[in-house]
Length: 549
Ligand code: ADP
Image 1 (cartoon, helix red, strand yellow):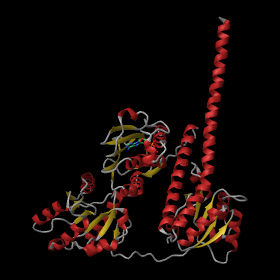
Image 2 (cartoon, rainbow, N blue to C red; image 1 turned 135 degrees about the vertical axis):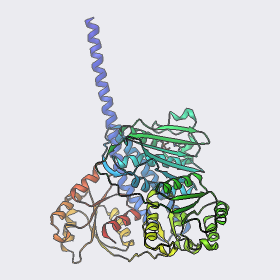
Image 3 (tube, rainbow, N blue to C red; image 1 turned 90 degrees about the horizontal axis):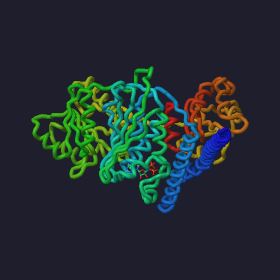
Image 4 (cartoon, rainbow, N blue to C red; image 1 turned 90 degrees about the vertical axis):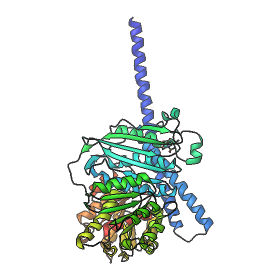
């Protein structure tokens, strides 16, 4: 018996050692993947940046086609690398969550706008339903929540050819659980395949990659993230040919800050007409506007709206919201017809446009619209739009289109020459990598700014101290030889580059998509953070934000 005990003990020891070494090797593999993907990101920034610059030049159609293909391939490679990086971090148990107070509605509005182009390219209606979401700040990990939503909504758009994608977000009655669902009217998933979805590198059938691209990693990552956030994981309901619904619930904590930036507008007594061929969109808009006290009638076609208008003896509505893309009679045709009716001549009409049409304000205003909002219309857009209507109405007791002159940011007022006085800044770019320098330099110069370059923190301090003309803003790489960006920032904040520069806006540029970077930048005294690859829009947005320019 003793012998058997000894054998068993030995075997147990061996098993423990074997398990430990297996765990070690899983960890080592994950760490290797993590550092590899990080290393690959740096040259990818060069590739993407250079192609981005190339495409801003005059190219022949063929050249543009080549450059666009290369750019989109580079982007998918970068996505793949990001996925692998994330996946290996999860495997290695290295994902740490951050718990911060944030305004979930603002995040969702912003998120849905960022997905709009993809949906509109495919003529799919993308909607955000936040009727069950109270106006509250919450405490959770916003970037991880956004990451899961990006995957689910991205998939929903990808696997849907016509119809709609609806993201619904709400809290439970106790405000302790966040409930999200993404529903689409796409190809659906066979029942026997549903269980496989959350395994890494799995796709429903082998032709998926060829037809839709993707790696089969997204859902595996999202599902694990939901569990790391203490949720149960993602649930799926699907019917082939009809569509799918992915949903998840995660616990959230109440926030100490109880005042979200956004508040509801009161539009008591305002009559609103909505015309949109998408019934779900009508319902959502109607619910939101009714919750604010408005009286809403919605119509699924221009003909229905006109019939109702002709019935009414006088103008029955204060404001009309009209979808531009409708079958039979589109938004422009309807608008012209409405303008023919005497009673409706002066009523404010708002065009709901897709992103690609949004810039065409001249045509919209020629057609007879007063203003426009881009779809998907979020609670924020509506708040801004209706606050203007209400303040106009309070100021003057009539309703007149000319009252719509105040500028508000998201919905563009037509005929309102935006006050974009050109603003030229002197920007100091601190980066040790020659290719990155080149990309950022061209980009900043294209934006109309003049740029000085320093290759590390020490050089940056030198430039600031000795430059005859002062700098207005700094883009600062983090990892650099001699003196890194964190130290350089601390020195600037202490006044080492002169008192005048102690408060200069410093925006970090980093190749790291690693957690903790943002905190490190903020701790060092930087104002903001941009992760590479940088692009025109991101840089321009940061400059506007930090320069009042
Ligand atoms: P990827 O989209 O990169 O292939 P995912 O893990 O996100 O990887 O998705 C895995 C597979 O699940 C997809 O390839 C697709 O076959 C299926 N799938 C995911 N979402 C949907 C959806 N909304 N409708 C239909 N199929 C889906």
